[in-house]
Amino acid sequence: MSIISMVLVVFVAFLAGIEGILDEFQFHQPLVACTLIGLVTGNLTAGIILGGTLQMLALGWANIGAAVAPDAALASVASAIILVLGGQGVNGVSTAIAIAIPLAVAGLFLTMIVRTLAVPIVHLMDSAAEEGNFRKIEFLHIAAVCMQGVRIAVPAAALLFIPAESVQAFLTSMPAWLTDGMAIGGGMVVAVGYAMVINMIATKEVWPFFAIGFVVAAMTDLTLIALGALGVAMALIYLNLSKMGGSSNGGSNSGDPLGDILNDY
Image 1 (tube, rainbow, N blue to C red):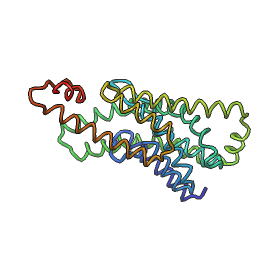
Image 2: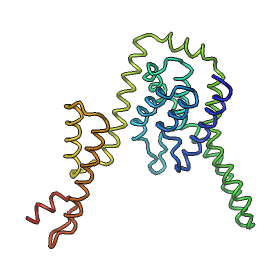
Image 3: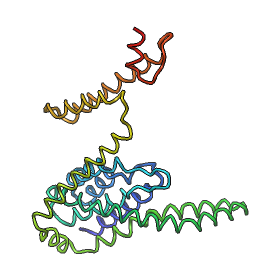
Image 4: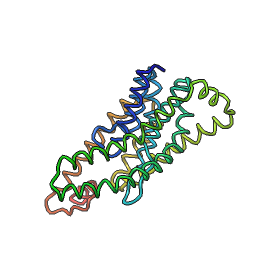
């Protein structure tokens, strides 16, 4: 890997770490981070496939209250770097996905450390606010955010200094039962992540649409574009039914647009 590619990878890792807090440009999302790393290293196809697969897993990761979700940024960046160094291309995606799971847990530990270190910075910002020193407040704010970027950039840089031959030798030395098991386990974790999303958004009103989409996807040879078009059409139908159910004269709005319409008749 060239020096320019290594610098760009570290820069992408830095942006991914920052976006884990800012959530403005979504650089920390697996689909974006892996794609960018694949782009700057000349492995765009493998990066997109890895990012798309990890994105299905990360859909179920969310910060709820005091519970912090696994770190999607470190999992995405580190697994993409390992995929590139491994030199297996698309064939190494399944192994990289399985490696991403423990990396996400390690990233959670790093997140806790950085957030703990950020507490004194908050107190310094309070003191600066009492002094009316807005420039100091801005500087401390930027420094605290950059700490999140360094949290991902440093491990990414460390991985880049590992010789590619060592990574390739490690991956090729793994027995078939281990690689196959990791691939199966990674696929199961992706399914669990998607199931977590379904569990959060599932209601009795949308279950019929999910069942229809599941059957159509499993029983036909439609492309992802066709399935996406069907999903948009179903969403528009549901929104129109919601408006009809909520604006009916004399009818009760129970939250179920289909039920409200049927009750009106």
